[in-house]
Amino acid sequence: MIWVMIFSFFLLIVIGTPIAFSMGASALFFILVEGIPLSTVSQRFFSNTQSFAFLAVPSLFLREV
Image (cartoon, rainbow, N blue to C red; front, side):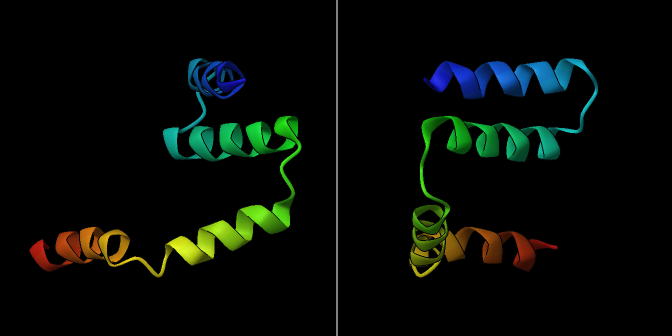
């Protein structure tokens, strides 16, 4: 079912949607097609933000600017 996300991403790119919106829309479409509960998605998203590695990369970019 990963093809659903890839196909929707490239379809949105072809019709002229900006890349950031295409990524978000295809990810949301994949979540809805797979039937993943939104509570699980939000829980995993916020639990992964507690990881040092995920926070180190954006801070590295901000330090360089």
